[in-house]
Each structure stands twice: as structure tokens, then as C-alpha cells.
Image 1 (cartoon, rainbow, N blue to C red):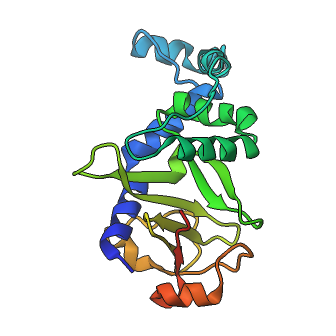
Image 2: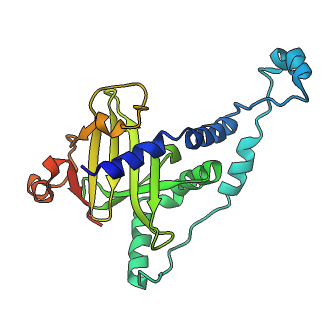
Image 3: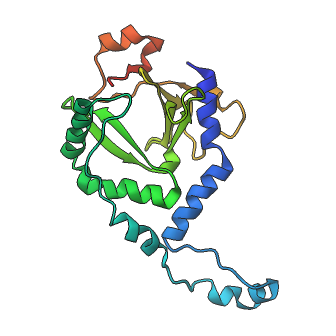
Length: 224
């Protein structure tokens, strides 16, 4: 268990400013606007009257641009060649991302951030799953700006437990809160409220592979 990385991830998800920014943007998109008044006198006079009155124009601002965005391919970079770019494009097409990309673009335009997780499905082929911005956090390299060193995903499962996955270039580390809770532990030592956890999923690597990586079976090799 890497306490420092786990602490970093939980600190990111407990950041009130970060959470408020995402929630406020999504609320405006859904039509839950904050009413603005010229002063306290207007608020006290008309606040109750206008509380349920709003004209939701925000979706048009986001959707008009989302509908015009179209990804047509991937170009080679300093770290990838033409063949690798073509492989990525085939993965993109196989996952029907030409139809699902709007979901990713909309999230980016709405919140300022957007993420997808690429992971082998039960057929062993790479699958692409769009994520809500608030459920993912990334840490960039100090030595190589723009390169992600570590990513994390946090969610509350249907059993009431919080699940957290740390994504490293060579492995994944999975954790679960030690007890079910409606809210994320808010203490500074929140990492002490989590433990290594391997969910009983059908698409995880073999037991032999897990044992080779170690850490009690809470670590999965990253088949990048």
C-alpha cells in the first residue's frame, strides 16, 4: 500500500473547491441556476417569487459546440509511430467512439476536464469507458509536463463502500473503505480508513499473475 499516493488521491477528491466547481457547472447545465439580484432589497422582495422561474439556455452553449466536434483519426507523436496511431484508431472505431465521443466532449466543455478509462474487456480486447470528471483525478509529471504519472478513480458502490483505484503505468492498486459510509471520510488521515481490496470480477487477470505482482492480491498488472 502506497500511503503517500493514496493520501494524494483522497485529498484531491476531498477538495471542496474542486467538487464545487464540477457540481456548479453541472447544476447550471441541468437548469439549476443561481439567481442574481441587484441588491438585498430585490432579493427579499422578489426572491421567493422568482425562485422557480428560470430559462435554461446553458445546454445550447455546450451542445452546439459538442455537435460540431468530430475526431477523424490519430497522428503519430514523438513517442508513437504510424502503426501505433493506426492501432489506436482501430480500437476507437471498434468501441464505436464515433458515436460515444460526444459524451466525452460534452463533459470536457461542461466541467473543463474529461477522462476515459481503457481496459481489456472479457474478450481481452481494449474497451473505452467515458468517466465523469468528478470521479477521476490525475497527477502530472514534474519532469515531463503533460505526462500523467498517476491517476485515481473513486466511487461509492451499491454496497455502501467507497472504492478507489490507483492507476500506475505498470499496475493498478485497488482499495475499499473499511466500512460503508454515505460520505467520504473527511479526516486528514483518511487513508487509514481504506484497505487493499480485490473485487470478485470476471475480467481480472489470473490468480498466478496477481500473486506474482504481490500486495495480497490488491494489485493488478496494467496490460498496456
